[in-house]
Amino acid sequence: MKPEDILAKHGLSRTSIRTKLIQILAEAHEALSSKEIEQQLDDNVDRVTIYRTIKLFEDKGLIHKIVVDEQSTKYRLIRENKSTDHPHFHCIKCDKVVCLPDTPLPCCDLPQGFRVSTQNTIIEGTCQKCNK
Amino acid sequence: MKPEDILAKHGLSRTSIRTKLIQILAEAHEALSSKEIEQQLDDNVDRVTIYRTIKLFEDKGLIHKIVVDEQSTKYRLIRENKSTDHPHFHCIKCDKVVCLPDTPLPCCDLPQGFRVSTQNTIIEGTCQKCNK
DNA sequence: TCATAATTGCAACTTTGTTGCAAAAGTATC
DNA sequence: GATACTTTTGCAACAAAGTTGCAATTATGA
Image (cartoon, rainbow over all chains, first blue to last red; front, top):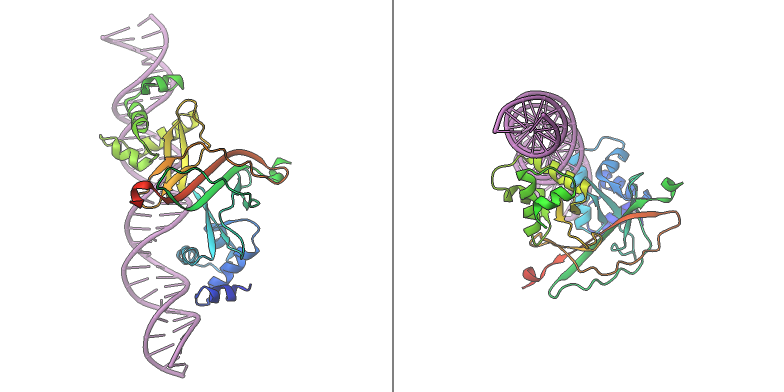
Protein backbone atom coordinates (compact mmCIF):
# COMPACT_ATOMS: atom_id res chain seq x y z
CA MET A 1 0.00 0.00 0.00
CA LYS A 2 1.22 3.50 -0.87
CA PRO A 3 1.84 6.00 1.95
CA GLU A 4 -0.96 8.19 0.58
CA ASP A 5 -3.42 5.28 0.75
CA ILE A 6 -2.38 4.44 4.31
CA LEU A 7 -3.09 8.02 5.36
CA ALA A 8 -6.47 8.03 3.60
CA LYS A 9 -7.40 4.66 5.09
CA HIS A 10 -6.92 6.07 8.61
CA GLY A 11 -8.70 9.34 7.85
CA LEU A 12 -5.58 11.50 8.00
CA SER A 13 -4.89 14.42 5.71
CA ARG A 14 -2.04 14.08 3.27
CA THR A 15 0.99 16.23 4.01
CA SER A 16 4.50 15.85 2.65
CA ILE A 17 5.98 15.18 6.08
CA ARG A 18 3.49 12.43 6.89
CA THR A 19 3.99 10.81 3.49
CA LYS A 20 7.78 10.83 3.87
CA LEU A 21 7.62 9.53 7.42
CA ILE A 22 5.54 6.52 6.37
CA GLN A 23 7.91 5.89 3.47
CA ILE A 24 10.93 5.88 5.78
CA LEU A 25 9.25 3.43 8.16
CA ALA A 26 8.09 1.23 5.30
CA GLU A 27 11.58 0.95 3.87
CA ALA A 28 13.31 0.35 7.22
CA HIS A 29 14.32 -3.20 8.06
CA GLU A 30 14.43 -2.42 11.75
CA ALA A 31 12.47 -0.30 14.20
CA LEU A 32 13.49 3.37 14.21
CA SER A 33 13.77 5.94 16.97
CA SER A 34 12.38 9.47 16.55
CA LYS A 35 15.96 10.71 16.18
CA GLU A 36 16.73 8.20 13.44
CA ILE A 37 13.56 9.29 11.67
CA GLU A 38 14.60 12.94 12.06
CA GLN A 39 17.99 12.20 10.47
CA GLN A 40 16.37 10.48 7.49
CA LEU A 41 13.97 13.38 6.85
CA ASP A 42 16.54 15.33 4.80
CA ASP A 43 15.06 18.84 4.95
CA ASN A 44 15.25 19.78 8.61
CA VAL A 45 11.81 19.07 9.99
CA ASP A 46 11.13 20.33 13.50
CA ARG A 47 11.53 17.80 16.34
CA VAL A 48 8.12 18.78 17.68
CA THR A 49 6.41 17.94 14.40
CA ILE A 50 8.01 14.50 14.38
CA TYR A 51 6.95 13.81 17.97
CA ARG A 52 3.41 14.91 17.17
CA THR A 53 3.22 12.88 13.98
CA ILE A 54 4.53 9.76 15.71
CA LYS A 55 1.97 10.14 18.48
CA LEU A 56 -0.81 10.64 15.94
CA PHE A 57 0.26 7.55 13.97
CA GLU A 58 0.39 5.54 17.19
CA ASP A 59 -3.10 6.63 18.27
CA LYS A 60 -4.52 5.85 14.83
CA GLY A 61 -2.88 2.43 14.77
CA LEU A 62 -0.46 3.01 11.90
CA ILE A 63 2.66 2.29 13.90
CA HIS A 64 3.72 0.21 16.84
CA LYS A 65 5.83 1.46 19.73
CA ILE A 66 8.61 -0.73 21.12
CA VAL A 67 10.12 0.39 24.42
CA VAL A 68 13.70 -0.85 24.24
CA ASP A 69 15.32 0.97 27.10
CA GLU A 70 14.68 4.00 29.28
CA GLN A 71 16.45 6.22 26.77
CA SER A 72 15.31 4.50 23.63
CA THR A 73 11.87 4.01 22.11
CA LYS A 74 11.57 2.72 18.57
CA TYR A 75 8.71 2.54 16.10
CA ARG A 76 7.63 0.18 13.34
CA LEU A 77 4.98 0.41 10.68
CA ILE A 78 2.12 -1.99 11.29
CA ARG A 79 1.64 -4.22 8.29
CA GLU A 80 -1.57 -5.95 7.42
CA ASN A 81 -2.18 -9.39 8.90
CA LYS A 82 0.67 -8.95 11.31
CA SER A 83 0.26 -8.93 15.04
CA THR A 84 2.26 -6.45 17.11
CA ASP A 85 2.53 -8.70 20.11
CA HIS A 86 5.43 -10.77 18.81
CA PRO A 87 8.75 -10.50 20.64
CA HIS A 88 11.47 -8.07 19.59
CA PHE A 89 15.20 -8.57 19.65
CA HIS A 90 17.45 -5.71 20.75
CA CYS A 91 21.14 -6.06 19.88
CA ILE A 92 23.14 -4.45 22.67
CA LYS A 93 26.15 -4.05 20.34
CA CYS A 94 24.74 -2.41 17.21
CA ASP A 95 21.54 -1.19 18.95
CA LYS A 96 19.27 -2.48 16.17
CA VAL A 97 15.79 -3.76 16.97
CA VAL A 98 14.25 -6.47 14.79
CA CYS A 99 11.00 -8.40 14.97
CA LEU A 100 11.27 -12.07 15.86
CA PRO A 101 9.19 -14.80 14.26
CA ASP A 102 5.74 -14.99 15.73
CA THR A 103 6.23 -17.74 18.27
CA PRO A 104 3.16 -18.39 20.37
CA LEU A 105 3.59 -16.36 23.54
CA PRO A 106 2.75 -18.17 26.73
CA CYS A 107 -0.57 -17.37 28.25
CA CYS A 108 0.80 -16.32 31.62
CA ASP A 109 -1.39 -17.48 34.46
CA LEU A 110 -2.41 -14.03 35.61
CA PRO A 111 -3.90 -13.49 39.05
CA GLN A 112 -7.71 -13.26 39.08
CA GLY A 113 -9.18 -9.96 37.97
CA PHE A 114 -6.26 -8.85 35.84
CA ARG A 115 -7.01 -7.83 32.25
CA VAL A 116 -4.38 -7.73 29.52
CA SER A 117 -4.27 -5.19 26.71
CA THR A 118 -0.82 -5.55 25.20
CA GLN A 119 2.33 -7.53 25.72
CA ASN A 120 5.84 -6.22 25.12
CA THR A 121 8.75 -8.65 25.08
CA ILE A 122 12.28 -7.46 24.50
CA ILE A 123 14.98 -10.06 24.19
CA GLU A 124 18.41 -8.55 24.70
CA GLY A 125 21.57 -9.99 23.29
CA THR A 126 23.87 -9.84 20.31
CA CYS A 127 22.76 -10.34 16.73
CA GLN A 128 24.18 -12.50 13.97
CA LYS A 129 26.34 -9.74 12.46
CA CYS A 130 27.82 -8.68 15.80
CA ASN A 131 28.64 -12.28 16.76
CA LYS A 132 30.87 -12.87 13.74
CA MET B 1 18.19 -10.20 55.73
CA LYS B 2 18.79 -6.76 57.24
CA PRO B 3 19.70 -3.83 54.97
CA GLU B 4 23.07 -3.58 56.72
CA ASP B 5 23.81 -7.24 55.97
CA ILE B 6 22.82 -6.84 52.33
CA LEU B 7 25.28 -3.95 51.99
CA ALA B 8 28.05 -5.90 53.70
CA LYS B 9 27.38 -8.98 51.57
CA HIS B 10 27.95 -6.96 48.40
CA GLY B 11 31.02 -5.17 49.74
CA LEU B 12 29.38 -1.77 50.03
CA SER B 13 29.99 0.69 52.83
CA ARG B 14 27.13 1.38 55.19
CA THR B 15 25.59 4.83 54.93
CA SER B 16 22.24 6.00 56.21
CA ILE B 17 20.92 6.75 52.72
CA ARG B 18 21.83 3.29 51.38
CA THR B 19 20.31 1.59 54.39
CA LYS B 20 17.06 3.52 54.06
CA LEU B 21 16.87 2.96 50.32
CA ILE B 22 17.14 -0.81 50.76
CA GLN B 23 14.52 -0.67 53.50
CA ILE B 24 12.08 1.20 51.24
CA LEU B 25 12.56 -1.30 48.42
CA ALA B 26 12.26 -4.24 50.79
CA GLU B 27 8.95 -3.01 52.16
CA ALA B 28 7.46 -2.10 48.75
CA HIS B 29 4.94 -4.50 47.26
CA GLU B 30 5.54 -3.12 43.79
CA ALA B 31 8.48 -1.85 41.79
CA LEU B 32 9.38 1.77 42.52
CA SER B 33 10.63 4.59 40.31
CA SER B 34 13.51 6.83 41.39
CA LYS B 35 10.99 9.59 42.03
CA GLU B 36 8.84 7.35 44.23
CA ILE B 37 11.98 6.42 46.16
CA GLU B 38 12.87 10.12 46.49
CA GLN B 39 9.44 10.88 47.95
CA GLN B 40 9.74 8.10 50.51
CA LEU B 41 13.18 9.26 51.68
CA ASP B 42 11.75 11.86 54.10
CA ASP B 43 14.74 14.15 54.60
CA ASN B 44 15.34 15.69 51.21
CA VAL B 45 18.10 13.62 49.71
CA ASP B 46 19.60 14.94 46.48
CA ARG B 47 18.28 13.44 43.23
CA VAL B 48 21.85 12.83 42.05
CA THR B 49 22.64 10.73 45.09
CA ILE B 50 19.58 8.57 44.46
CA TYR B 51 20.47 8.08 40.79
CA ARG B 52 24.01 7.14 41.75
CA THR B 53 22.91 4.78 44.50
CA ILE B 54 20.42 3.05 42.21
CA LYS B 55 23.08 2.59 39.54
CA LEU B 56 25.51 1.21 42.11
CA PHE B 57 22.90 -1.24 43.46
CA GLU B 58 22.11 -2.34 39.93
CA ASP B 59 25.75 -2.94 39.05
CA LYS B 60 26.30 -4.90 42.25
CA GLY B 61 23.21 -7.00 41.65
CA LEU B 62 21.11 -5.81 44.60
CA ILE B 63 18.24 -4.51 42.51
CA HIS B 64 16.56 -5.27 39.21
CA LYS B 65 15.59 -2.64 36.63
CA ILE B 66 12.24 -2.86 34.85
CA VAL B 67 11.79 -0.53 31.89
CA VAL B 68 8.05 0.12 31.80
CA ASP B 69 7.87 2.99 29.40
CA GLU B 70 10.20 5.59 27.95
CA GLN B 71 9.47 7.93 30.83
CA SER B 72 9.20 5.33 33.52
CA THR B 73 11.80 2.93 34.87
CA LYS B 74 11.14 1.06 38.08
CA TYR B 75 13.31 -0.95 40.44
CA ARG B 76 12.87 -3.97 42.67
CA LEU B 77 15.04 -5.52 45.30
CA ILE B 78 16.41 -8.89 44.20
CA ARG B 79 15.49 -11.56 46.71
CA GLU B 80 17.37 -14.79 47.18
CA ASN B 81 16.36 -17.76 45.04
CA LYS B 82 14.33 -15.53 42.74
CA SER B 83 15.03 -15.08 39.06
CA THR B 84 14.68 -11.64 37.49
CA ASP B 85 13.57 -12.93 34.10
CA HIS B 86 9.92 -13.42 35.04
CA PRO B 87 7.29 -11.24 33.35
CA HIS B 88 6.06 -7.99 34.90
CA PHE B 89 2.57 -6.55 34.85
CA HIS B 90 2.10 -2.81 34.37
CA CYS B 91 -1.33 -1.41 35.24
CA ILE B 92 -2.09 1.44 32.85
CA LYS B 93 -4.64 2.88 35.28
CA CYS B 94 -2.83 3.02 38.63
CA ASP B 95 0.64 2.77 37.07
CA LYS B 96 1.77 0.05 39.49
CA VAL B 97 4.22 -2.63 38.40
CA VAL B 98 4.08 -6.07 39.98
CA CYS B 99 5.97 -9.30 39.38
CA LEU B 100 4.00 -12.13 37.81
CA PRO B 101 4.34 -15.76 38.83
CA ASP B 102 7.36 -17.38 37.27
CA THR B 103 5.73 -19.04 34.26
CA PRO B 104 8.18 -20.79 32.00
CA LEU B 105 9.05 -18.34 29.25
CA PRO B 106 8.96 -19.70 25.73
CA CYS B 107 12.26 -20.50 24.15
CA CYS B 108 11.77 -18.36 21.06
CA ASP B 109 13.22 -19.92 17.96
CA LEU B 110 15.83 -17.26 17.32
CA PRO B 111 17.48 -16.93 13.92
CA GLN B 112 20.89 -18.58 13.66
CA GLY B 113 23.79 -16.68 15.19
CA PHE B 114 21.76 -14.71 17.70
CA ARG B 115 22.83 -14.86 21.33
CA VAL B 116 20.53 -13.99 24.22
CA SER B 117 21.58 -12.30 27.45
CA THR B 118 18.35 -11.18 29.10
CA GLN B 119 14.63 -11.20 28.45
CA ASN B 120 12.23 -8.48 29.53
CA THR B 121 8.48 -8.96 29.28
CA ILE B 122 6.02 -6.24 30.23
CA ILE B 123 2.36 -7.14 30.13
CA GLU B 124 0.17 -4.05 30.00
CA GLY B 125 -3.41 -3.94 31.18
CA THR B 126 -5.51 -3.20 34.20
CA CYS B 127 -5.06 -4.78 37.60
CA GLN B 128 -7.57 -6.39 39.95
CA LYS B 129 -8.20 -3.23 41.98
CA CYS B 130 -8.73 -1.01 38.92
CA ASN B 131 -11.14 -3.52 37.34
CA LYS B 132 -13.57 -3.41 40.25
C1' DT C 1 -10.93 30.42 -5.52
C1' DC C 2 -11.90 31.21 -1.00
C1' DA C 3 -13.03 30.36 3.78
C1' DT C 4 -12.28 27.22 7.33
C1' DA C 5 -9.88 23.78 9.69
C1' DA C 6 -5.75 21.29 10.40
C1' DT C 7 -0.69 21.15 10.36
C1' DT C 8 3.85 22.98 11.15
C1' DG C 9 7.63 25.78 13.28
C1' DC C 10 9.34 28.48 16.94
C1' DA C 11 10.23 29.58 21.67
C1' DA C 12 9.96 28.37 26.15
C1' DC C 13 9.45 24.95 29.54
C1' DT C 14 9.48 20.26 32.02
C1' DT C 15 11.30 15.90 33.24
C1' DT C 16 14.93 12.66 33.66
C1' DG C 17 19.41 11.77 33.98
C1' DT C 18 24.75 13.00 33.85
C1' DT C 19 29.34 15.23 35.14
C1' DG C 20 32.84 17.86 37.84
C1' DC C 21 34.12 19.50 42.03
C1' DA C 22 34.19 20.66 46.87
C1' DA C 23 32.32 19.44 51.47
C1' DA C 24 30.90 15.83 54.54
C1' DA C 25 30.82 11.24 56.22
C1' DG C 26 32.72 6.52 56.53
C1' DT C 27 36.80 3.18 57.33
C1' DA C 28 40.97 1.53 58.99
C1' DT C 29 45.02 2.17 61.79
C1' DC C 30 47.20 3.48 65.60
C1' DG D 1 39.03 8.05 70.65
C1' DA D 2 42.14 10.81 67.35
C1' DT D 3 44.13 10.81 62.81
C1' DA D 4 44.76 10.14 57.89
C1' DC D 5 42.79 8.47 53.83
C1' DT D 6 39.08 7.06 50.89
C1' DT D 7 34.39 7.12 49.70
C1' DT D 8 29.96 9.32 49.58
C1' DT D 9 26.98 13.22 49.21
C1' DG D 10 25.27 17.82 47.69
C1' DC D 11 25.47 21.59 44.63
C1' DA D 12 25.69 23.74 40.20
C1' DA D 13 25.65 23.31 35.60
C1' DC D 14 24.65 20.72 31.67
C1' DA D 15 22.36 17.45 28.21
C1' DA D 16 18.76 14.73 26.03
C1' DA D 17 13.94 13.78 25.26
C1' DG D 18 9.61 15.29 25.13
C1' DT D 19 5.52 18.83 25.92
C1' DT D 20 2.71 23.16 25.42
C1' DG D 21 1.01 27.62 23.57
C1' DC D 22 0.77 30.47 19.88
C1' DA D 23 1.35 32.35 15.36
C1' DA D 24 2.22 31.25 10.52
C1' DT D 25 1.63 28.09 6.92
C1' DT D 26 -0.64 24.48 4.38
C1' DA D 27 -4.57 21.26 3.22
C1' DT D 28 -9.59 20.45 2.30
C1' DG D 29 -14.21 21.05 0.85
C1' DA D 30 -17.73 23.92 -0.97
